Image 1 (cartoon, rainbow, N blue to C red):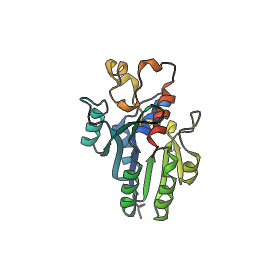
Image 2: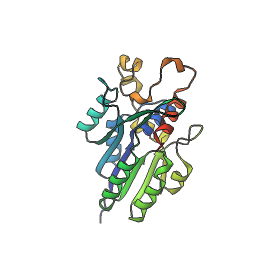
Image 3: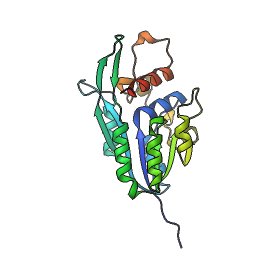
Image 4: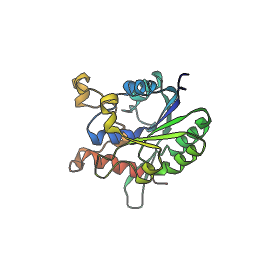
Length: 218
């Protein structure tokens, strides 16, 4: 009697995954990522969540969104909201937690395994709720950075934690295959993760983490 093929759904927190891979010095090859999890079972759906700035003439993340949309991913977007706080700092809000949670609860009765690409501790309660419906939850992030990109409470709640470093040779983009012009000017860097050149003293990791923190504000 053959073993039953598990039904899998991927949930990718786009900004969080970008920041995690960037902090480890590699880029995600989304074609390879899809193939990797298709090889592990029956892939029911691969969701990708990201916020976009819609009033710009050109969004640097748009080519990636379009490619994902045409190549097996279900892309969920939401327009960002910009505002100035009481200290005069410009902030951008584009939290996709609710959209991801709703989709996860809706699909839970139809899958055996949920793979969450995020280290956001806000997802701990969602993971617990999905587990109560009999779904095994795998969290993909990293503890290889300082500080770790995954919240401890999320890592503890998951049935299994995979450090993305262990997947780098399976889902990472080979730098030798990238066009030289793309290496100079990354095409898939979300506009809201960029900073003016005047902030040169800040490291790339700190920049992304800072923006992620701003996104989590209510």
